[in-house]
Length: 263
Length: 322
Ligand SMILES: Nc1ncnc2c1ncn2[C@@H]1O[C@H](COP(=O)(O)OP(=O)(O)O)[C@@H](O)[C@H]1O
Ligand SMILES: [Mg+2]
Image (tube, rainbow over all chains, first blue to last red; front, top):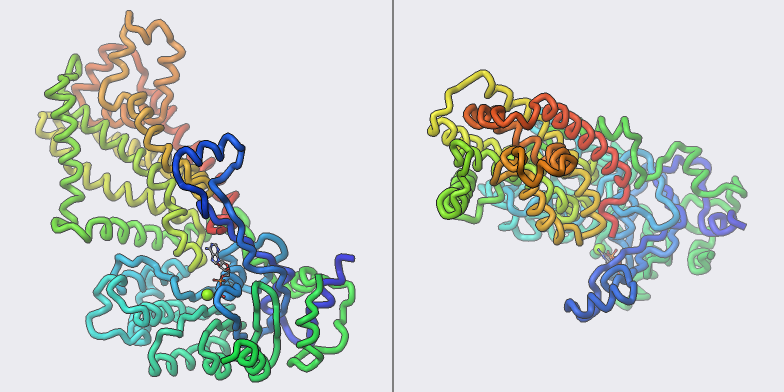
């Protein structure tokens, strides 16, 4: 029967208010132009053989995840490289449509990822303005928040006038975090955005995450430094090859993960 | 498929779980619906979508301006290229068609005629070519931030409008140099430009959706565009080709078809507005009714804009998918 798989996998707490529900989620990437000889003759023979796309392959990145996140939770997502953490966050943000299953959220989730570069050729200044406007802020709100964002990002004097392609990865990540954190979010998804920051910035951003969590619904955090996850989150989900591996209390899950990955 | 590892690891220990779920027959989707949660990758209603796009109008303008600026940051002359490009274009066309091939023929003042055609057609042409890439080249932005995707092709149309406005400085200078007197008729150019912009936005939305799911279109478009350019009477005058006794005059349906072509309509309306001598020349041929051209112009603008927006909107939730 259809009801069994969901009932088996997820336990629902009736006393708390859910903010994100992930229901048997599958995400499949389509990759074009993988393999193949890549010359005109092979393309032609492909068409003759009626293969529609140039060597299209599918990557099944998320294979049936289900879980419920409640209001006020800070959830850490851990797993090895390529296990599907970034994909999961993109799907929760509604940026990658599911192949099957669904993601249900209250309000609009916002994703803060490592390569969330807006426009590399533009100055930090312009990126701040564009980012704020794209998030739906009015020009007045943008102006009001501008200084706060610059201060929070704490870039060296003058760098705000330079194109973002001249930034180090740490500086870029800081600016992006500062932009996204300028708004209160219903659900904030942070994907390794804090990884490249220095110690001072980490303290600042940790405080801001705490604030956002109080103001808003929930925070998801993907980070490779397990100590950051342990400090910031009150629940940890370990995914492996797109499947749920463990879900629970941070110390416990991280201990199991460390043991399994042999760190 | 169940998750045995997960059940094992749960073991009733993790925070906030209870022994038996309260709603045995409840699916997660129904549970989510009960708490008013919404599908996060769902397409908003059309009404909401239009509101969202309208709310991003500042973003569209800022994005377009930023694109325009970043286009020339690498070159030494920088922003000067925005003016130099149209001037060089004019020079090349004049050298080839005005001097070498001397296509001047019966058309009075060939240069302003040509320049108007090249600039106005180029406006539509570039809106469509860059519109087709607007989703593909901004995938990182699409996958990073949540905003109505229609703002991207819209911004592209605005980029082209901003470029055109600079070219118009060159165009007006040429028109004045050729001794066109300023007349009230020239004011008609403003509504022509608005209609053409509407058409461009619509067309750009259509190709943006096609280009998002089928990259082949970007390879094909240059050829389609070149064919269209020749069919639109950009470098020669279509009305002159339709003179009695000409080949086209024996196939009236073909002539009618050419006259309904939006590329031709907007170019010719612009010329009618800006170039007094050309207007008199064409009116002398008595082959095209201006009112009919305006009708076509309005119809194309409305159909393209409404149709294009709806067409783009209907795939909203799928843009950015891997
Ligand atoms: N844009 C993409 N196109 C195709 N496959 C992708 C894409 N992004 C990620 N993948 C694949 O999806 C899987 C999960 O990737 P990802 O979510 O980035 O993992 P993580 O963030 O946990 O390191 C990997 O196998 C990866 O190769
Ligand atoms: Mg990742």
